[in-house]
Length: 140
Image (tube, rainbow, N blue to C red; front, side):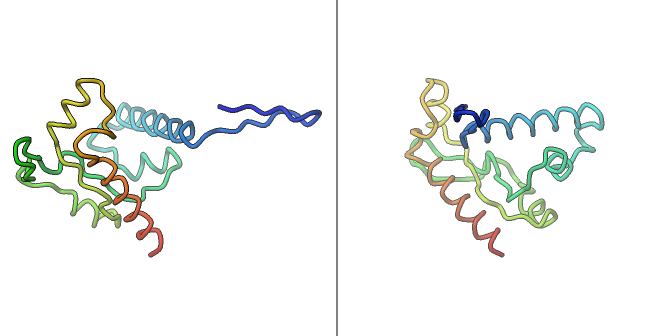
């Protein structure tokens, strides 16, 4: 956090984007934990967590959407059926990204390497696509 003290005017606190994002993630986690504790997991929705945390939902990101073969790079289903599309329709949200399980990324994480550098930049590609899709959704 950057603090600037102009002469005779008091203090100004400047929070970086990274610090604000961290605080938002922390607030969402706190709200979710409180909701789960009070109402149970099954009775807690993304809508109520977002509302209570004071954030807007821009879209959904499906984690473990598929699996990438470590030998040939082919992508295939990891689970039989995902409900991401149905959830997106029900919540009137776009699916921003589908993150596959990639053993190369898992190995990089286990070795302490940044995921941004793992798996041929797949996370950068997914992030770019998510930003593009959320911007398109905000414009509608």
